[in-house]
Image (cartoon, rainbow, N blue to C red; front, side):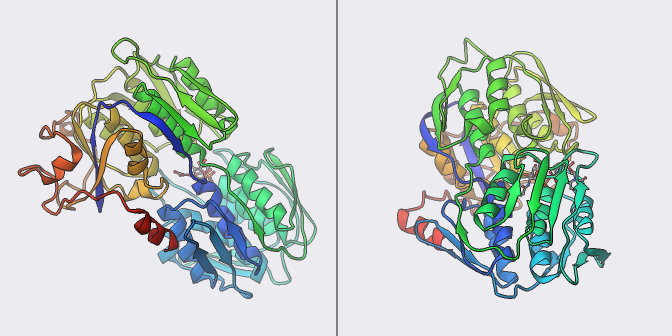
Length: 485
Ligand code: EPU
């Protein structure tokens, strides 16, 4: 298990390129099961969730190859296996997206029910409802979803929204299944997220007939077969948003390139309200440098809602930013109402935050101080890294495998922008595993003062691992080897 050691207080500078979207590529990878022809994805991000999805596909008989340049080619078997067991689904909830394609292709699918996760209960009832509407018989048995569609799926008109609004992967799952159903399917209450639009565009390149993408009413005219294609996924809007917040939070001039500002209009609007200077063009966003001793962000409330409103996947990062704002702000989470694992850790760093139901009241400005914190989920980890960039002293973020699920080599890219951040082999015993907030953890603790993260690993008496060795930046040969894996 690795940790990040961050020395706070550095200004960032320069430009950084955004990777392909993790949440767009996962359903696109599932869609490769709809044809036995190759699907080529030139810009799939090299993150652990993608590697896990490739293992799931290989388990279903697909051949997956990544070239030296990072181009991913996936070719599903002529007759794919149709069982995805607990071992793969438990590691990544997104793998439930194989249900629709496997069912459509083989008329039978057995996929383990994903369990809950730290961001809260994550049901799949809407996925099941959609498959049933398409004529599948669906049973839950021994923790598995077993779907059968003898004679094939039939198009249907359905409402897919749930109590919490639309479902992103549920819409993706049903849309994929419906491409090979007989007749027309209409999904009302469909998710409008850019990742769903991107999947629909990929499916249309494969020969599907889908209209209404980006609206809550998607129509799919079933076809007999789909074929291979080359599809570049959209840039990762959450990675872009995280980097933009890093620039704004550190009062730095950085340019986030190769992104889609039109997918992030709500973030740009909230930054404007927070009086954090930035500008953007068609495929870039630039934050402007300012003196944080003279100027602070204006407290700005956000409420997470389905696209185009504020994304739940940027909630933790926004909260980190608001800890440094000049006054009180309110963050309300309506998608995953328990997605607040970062609160206790930010408080360990000195933030003043109070949970109230599905909201959190953030009282700034906090004088954040570096300490030991624990990553708990992907976006919570990103928030801790952001807090570490501005905290006084050294922050150690443990269990960064969470961040590796969705951000490709984030520490290298932040270091290229001038941040002092290093990845170090962690000692699993160096920090208690129980992160539940207690009165004691509300008091920020200072680690030993360290001159630099690299020195921190080597310094005698430091509470990092005796095994703790800084990992050198990888050479291009090593990177190429990793890309081929
Ligand atoms: N929901 C149901 N029933 C269902 C499915 C969802 O009630 O059958 C509820 C959920 O509990 C939640 C709401 O509907 O309250 C929305 O969940 P959704 O299904 O849209 O989430 P998801 O598709 O499982 C994707 C992303 C998440 C992102 C959410 C919301 C992927 C692989 N995951 O999850 O990404 O937070 O949409 O935008 O695309 C992340 O990247 O960190 C992440 C968690």
